[in-house]
Length: 151
Image 1 (cartoon, rainbow, N blue to C red):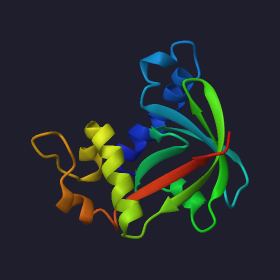
Image 2 (image 1 turned 90 degrees about the vertical axis):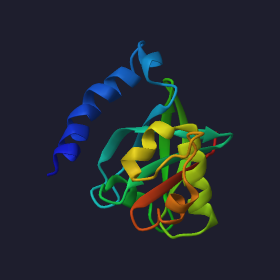
Image 3 (image 1 turned 45 degrees about the vertical axis):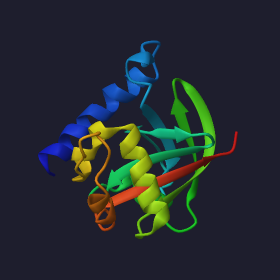
Image 4 (image 1 turned 135 degrees about the horizontal axis):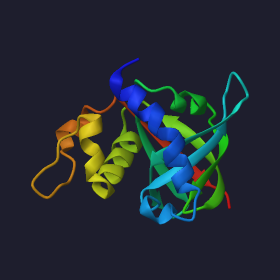
């Protein structure tokens, strides 16, 4: 396991606890807890993630080196997303293929959360907006997960 993977794994438990506590305001602006079932195991899983919300759509980004997003390939999966201690039902779908949907989602996510750009190897311009050339090259190493909220 890579050191960065171990770091995130160790941080998931306390970060989830923080986001579900009365002190959630420390991180709730751009951190959520995603609740879903493993596609193979059927086990209930939860993971804290950076998010961007645009109306009834919540967007998450991941490196293809992680595995949690694989649960939402194909038809996707019903999930719950917890934002500021409020749970929302929705349907999550992983987007891997290059195209407008992936590029627009990555652009929106990193424009709202430029601090995360370095994690995905995407540079920022002088205005702290993601560089278009890097967004064009994001397919193959970045996964966009879109959750369409249903409540």
